[in-house]
Length: 172
Image (tube, rainbow, N blue to C red):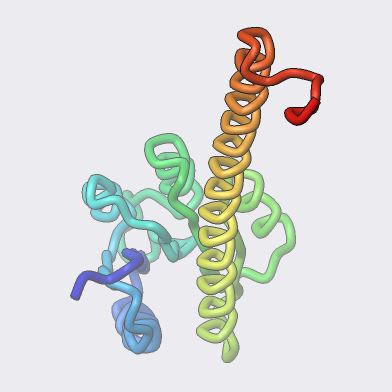
């Protein structure tokens, strides 16, 4: 059975990566893929993930690796519809504001409630996806209704001007 959403998790801490993957894999509508570096994640963007959970400090192991903000900028440039949840051990408000400025959907601080907060952010994103889909459907229905209404008005006008519809009642 094909999963409804593809989720990438990017973290250079293998323990954090596996724990988060295990926690989020219990949801049956997610196909979860993990990456230890931002560069590896970017190489797989063509797989069209819906959501990426991205660690802020991806250069903790390899000092030459891109950090989370750099990866976020590239993701938003190359795949603007992908939603990103930034995960970080930093509690600085300016870091959170920076990530949101560059397009992150949410900023989650790594602590004892981070898995629960990441899970909530995921479901908020899914709700948003569903609302956008419904809005497109309602817009399409409104356009179809408008076209049908205009066609009906044109049909009535044609019937009136060709004499098939008159102002006289039929029995007089």
